Length: 434
Image 1 (cartoon, one colour):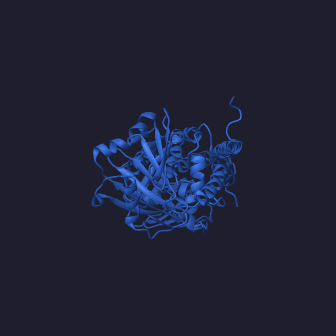
Image 2 (spheres, rainbow, N blue to C red):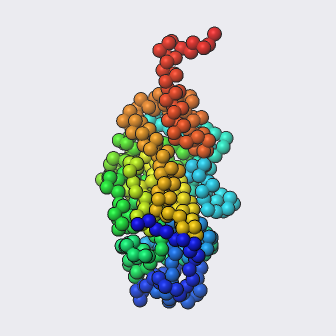
Image 3 (tube, one colour):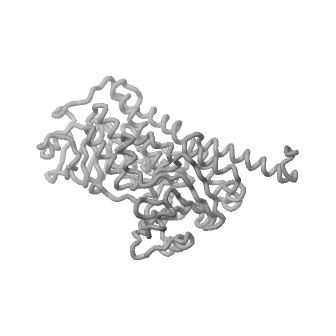
């Protein structure tokens, strides 16, 4: 049955529907905005919305709903702040999604990218340049910490060191079992990543296999870091259905390999071979190497069950070409904010509206990306030669990253460009020239 909350105002502490906790209360993160003695009374808290996961998706939801006056609690299984393996690339077009002022957002940018260097197996480089920013680089520990701090500033309660082990949405309120006791909420938002406990509990865990990424954070000499300042690198053809990347941060390089068809078992040497191909001089003993799974978007996902919504990686919403998920995480967070507020105050249909909007505003484009990725990864060398090396590609890619066009437009323009060029070659040149 679809959830409805007709003209429901935010509830007050001490009313029915309180959550219960074990004697060992969770650690209250310093940003939690509550009375000082409230940690001893967790069993008497009333929660409108329980957000599971303190990453960009969860923090975006918490910021929006707390500012709207709803009682929001965020639980995070890790101790905050925490490191998160991630390339840290945020397309310029998604800057408006960051729930921070422009000044505070700019303080988090490790670098501003104006050049993209693409290669095929570390050779045959193509460089895309733009006067406008193309990508912003962030470190996930700093970025996530700033977003969840903003959520706390707006009134959300933040509990870290609390792991969710089960979700039951069958009653009038969603019951959530955690390592520190049982909680309840009218709405539960699952923003707890690719191995989402929330998705698994309500039968929405993906059945498809996961992709895998191997990433290293590498200190390098200042002159080498300066060479990469303002530039990111992407490499194709080294792995089946995957890419390699080199992303600069303020004091190191973030490099990695990902494949949507290989699920792990890689060796560090494979990553170091990739680095050597880019002439990156480094000390392997100082490299911090991490492996992690990432979702594979296949277009057939359900994003909610009753009063439980899934966001970002937990919903499997990632770019099927690049594995990027930051933009989709925050965008799904903003959609969830709109839908939940509407459901609480106007009695709208929570379940259907969230799914409809995610499919319309995010997934419709991802279906085109998926078709493009399938073709590209099956014919990588040909696509690189005819598509990426085409003189028109740089302008198309820059317009995509800045938001002037979307992937649907890219697909259409590339086909038209390649077709026109092929026709000219068959005719022996450009017949329009005198």
